[in-house]
Image 1: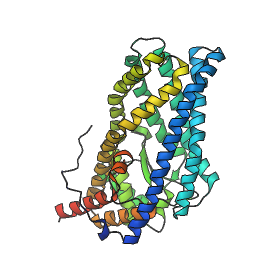
Image 2: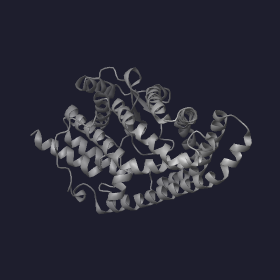
Image 3: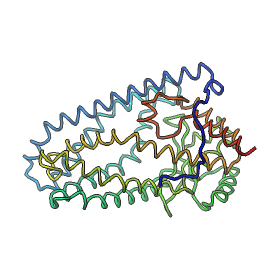
Image 4: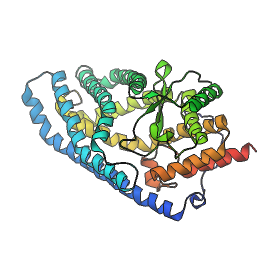
Length: 376
């Protein structure tokens, strides 16, 4: 799962000033300082909310007089709704911050409407996982051995269904020229028949993005409609499409499920160890504490998860270069990404370790130049 098709390349040391003006670099630095501050404040608020719930929620759970599973469902819903409302002000401020820097309109209604397509499935997955953990912990001493494979099955099921949900929230690609390019790139990548669709997001953001979702028959590539506007040439759009088809060819979604299978057992074991003195995961009153422990574990695991994600994204970049054979379009695409999203070409180390799940803009441009040197 860790091996990729990317050869050994030296991608550090690129001078971003060759590709971005001093003004552009200063803008991206200022924008991202605000983004990092909002992330830190949101995290502190979430942790504070969990500490408060650890003190308040157990008494309410014990007074409900419901069974273990029913109490877990009620407590889980309270937790999810509370954390969503705690995070909402920071999300809205982030939306305004992006608008302030010219990255999109400040249209709260459109933004909220767009969130519902992901909030529902995420809430269902969270509630199913909560019910599973409380139920197995209440019945088995070594419950993590029972729960771990079921969590993996849950993750695989929701990853599969997510492909069809993405299809419902998007529409077919209309541009005849791009449709022709898709057929050609799919043939090169050996992933013929992969649906490429478009999601309309321009009502709430001007940033460009694309993603691959689902696996097997549910696989879909989704382009944001902002990728198809006049800022990007057809060659640059081809690079985006080839990158996503590279994910499909490399089966990165399935491999990510494999990584989940590797980390879920030790994670649940640590969770059982951390909650043992408080009565364990089987007690629904401990759910706020369970969420707190999982949040801390997720923070500790984030650098490793980002390493894996960056490797897969780098492989998709390399496959896109091999498919399009156009390093100039690849370079200009990432230059435009840097300008249109204000992403820092070389972010600070802590940002890179904890927040960056893609190679940096500088690394992606350096890869294009390395590909060019290798294929003269």
